[in-house]
Length: 153
Image (cartoon, rainbow, N blue to C red; front, side, top):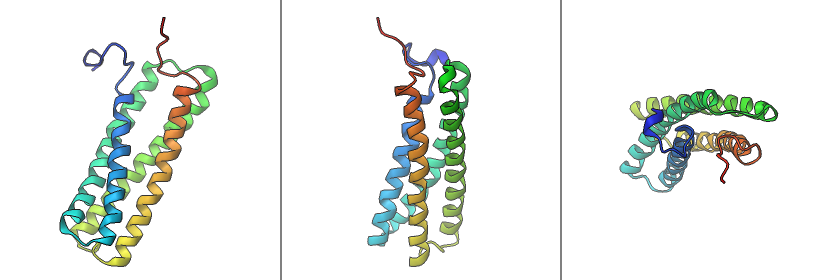
């Protein structure tokens, strides 16, 4: 896998990490629009995007676990790295369970009920808090501690 990466990239994690965030936020936006307009294509798209976001989150989490073994983490950043990993796991578990719930409710057509749709949207919003915390810790690793950054000459 390392040979497929550009020479400036220490691992694939930084290139993957933004995809589940973007997919999840797109699903959140479409979920909100679905509350306003009852369109079948929105209904199907939202469910598919949440499931896809969970799958991409899994790949991103696994690449992050690999990155910890490849990229040197300074001693002073180890607690932040550990917290980032923990929050990444919480976010992944949330994504997975939430996607499974949405898939089940879609299959049973229970998500078409207004109250269920509103509760699911609230659950989507809760997911953004997990993303925010995980991203904050990841940003701290890179921008405060320089983890994964190559020094320029």
